[in-house]
Image 1: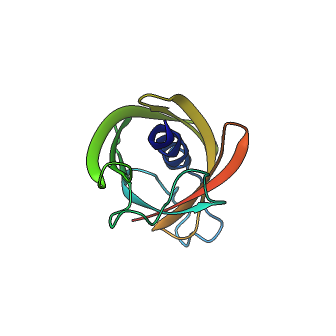
Image 2 (image 1 turned 90 degrees about the horizontal axis):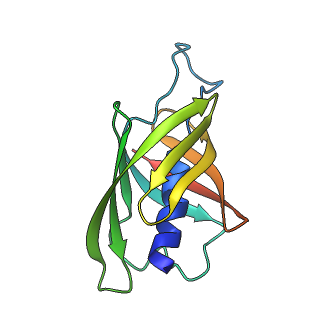
Image 3 (image 1 turned 180 degrees about the vertical axis):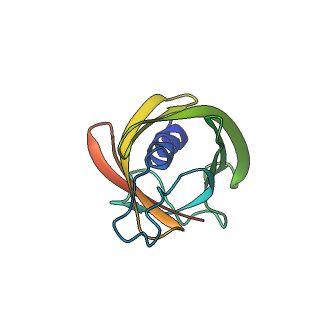
Length: 133
């Protein structure tokens, strides 16, 4: 269950995107592409982010598919993959369907073209997930 709680938090963060005020070309930044989860603030109880040598990744495709690569710290960092969907609701609000968890909604704030924060909550606990390309 701890693995899925982390999965829920990570994928919720990946679902959100917005336009950034620091864009030089006024183009909307997009979450499409492959992103690595680099930080969880505050830390999620029962999940040691640094326990595996590789960080979880998510790939958002233009057709609304989200592919996750996870590492199970309770099973010698065994790699597993999951597939779900994502949709942009409006503005910087997104919803992603996370396998074993369900739909997760949150907001995205970009810090340049290669990093974004996903603000969501896990079991009523506010969490910020940071992703980088």
